[in-house]
Length: 258
Image (cartoon, rainbow, N blue to C red; front, side, top):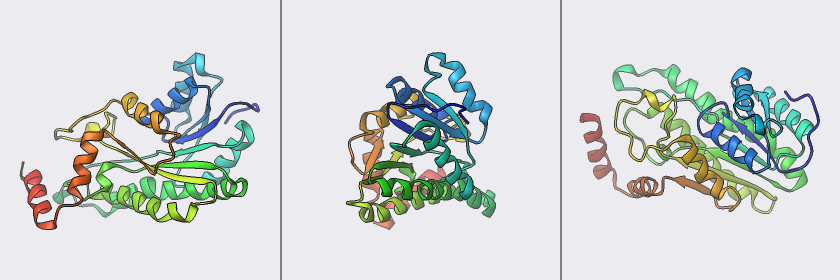
């Protein structure tokens, strides 16, 4: 954790910041002058970000965090606020993924992904909600996925965990109206990371982490509930939510057979 008090500028806390979207977004916000607490389990990976961008070293602050640990989530959030100041924007981006075929059905995989993707977000919200409500301001963005819209082949453990994130955010958003705290959701499509490298199928409109971070950056202060990208692929999957099951399963069977 940081060893000095840092004041001035907006403060963001990003989980899952050692790679992928989280890392790219941290760098982008730091370039804008934000103080950014970068959080992930591996401290050396967090420190490597500041080493790669020495001009941003005063804006990127490593805070090791296991998002599956409730007590640690609260303690690290408090440490960030003590060191950097009031967290303006909390981005709960930690995620895990493995595809799963029917022959590979594994309850432990469901459990592992739910612990990180869903309960990790729950723990982050639980850590920030009290302080943000008390002061009457702040925003929390949780990363779900376009796969949260409907069940997709080989994505049952991942999609279910992300659907839970989306459902939770939809449930909590109305209750937060009037509190000054905004709960929002980020629904990305396919982004080129070490996780999506596990896929053995064509990923439409595959984005770089930097391109994904730019989508978030553009809408980070607009207050809308959902940041969805890429737009064309996102609206295609939104349309698929409207299909009757008979037609939807006809389409997804073709995916399984291809």
